[in-house]
Image (cartoon, rainbow, N blue to C red; front, side, top):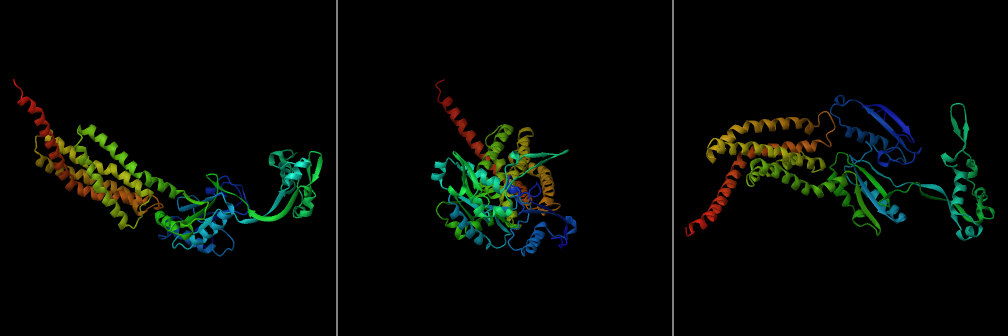
Length: 454
């Protein structure tokens, strides 16, 4: 890694500690088989347009020659990854199918590294007690576990005796030497406390060296295996669709279920509730406009600007080859308020000109479009200029905020130019509809008066 021209310094942490722990597995025990390498890269302005993702791909390719090493290049969080979770109560079936899924995930083109939280099979000491004999001799499973734990790895830290020195305490760990811990015959001669005195372990249990997972993870109280797929600047929705189309995930074995966490879960929740969020926002805007204009019909003219802004937002995403993601959906909600503001400037002046200056509808619309065009365009230019550096990715990583800015800029452009043409037309139709309702109401009021006997 230090041979890369854009790597200034590498800080290595092996085992535990805040820098050495994986943020996605917070709370796991420290382990010397894991290491974290923190890289200090050259400033972005000195990389000649080379992005962080390209450097990650080069480092990933350089580290691929290490045999038997699981490599995860990135920040460690879920903002640049798609996390797939397989869960089941059947541990062997889950492990066997997870290996099939991992092989198929690596065939997806364009993605980065694929890592799994499935523990590697490691040798372990397995004790299978004979509970009938243990009950007759008064030996409990807890007594067997305590005896073997103290003999092989030592007692718990809080139970260890301490050697008091002048300035510190040294814990005293008592356990069998390494050669004795690997001798099954010696371990079988360990004595376990029983009801009638010490009992040799070989009389109540069978000891063997076997293989098994070093760690068992759970999701919703089920055993699970997580797959972290580095997006490598691929759209999250595209990668998720390619993952779901894999044969091993379309036909899961009985008892194995699939779910997602991280950004994919948040995006699914956002899409599911986005319609409700949009309706709630439009309803709140409509209520405020009703209180402002003291009318239930004219606010509908202003809300027509929302329809004019959505095509521009999707057209901007199409032109820039940006996927519809969670940031772009947030940008659509932001666009609602800005697009509505342009219509308010126009319609408010039309209502003011007709009420206070006595202009007819046609003259009021022409005067409003002529006088309100400048502030509308100025506001759009100011908003677009502020969003342009974010859309271009200047100064920071554009992977998250750029789609939001692209949606806002595209929607503002279309809503600004179309609102000066379409909103006056919509206003005329709504005004005609209001006049029709008023004439119908007047006829109903005057009809009883005309037929009165007085």
